[in-house]
Length: 79
Image (cartoon, rainbow, N blue to C red; front, side):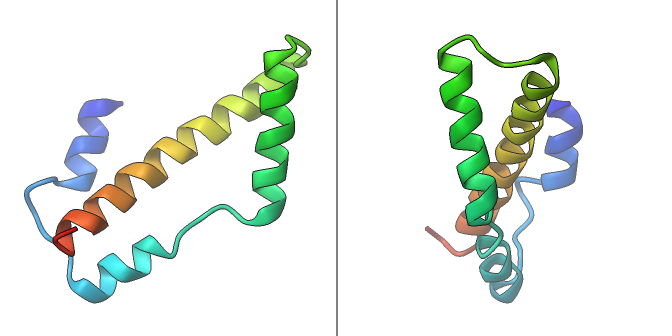
């Protein structure tokens, strides 16, 4: 997965400023943030169902991809 993401993100190529700013606006909405918080609390208490474990893992994966997109955007903007 890391090699595929690296090819997708292309760390040495810059985004235009408009695209970089648009990517930085990508974020989870409040309902998703609340759901992630609830799942994290249940995980800490070791009370997740199998379905919830998969849901939490999906949030973590998407969050990682979002972090990579934001990092690429910030680099392109010189931050």
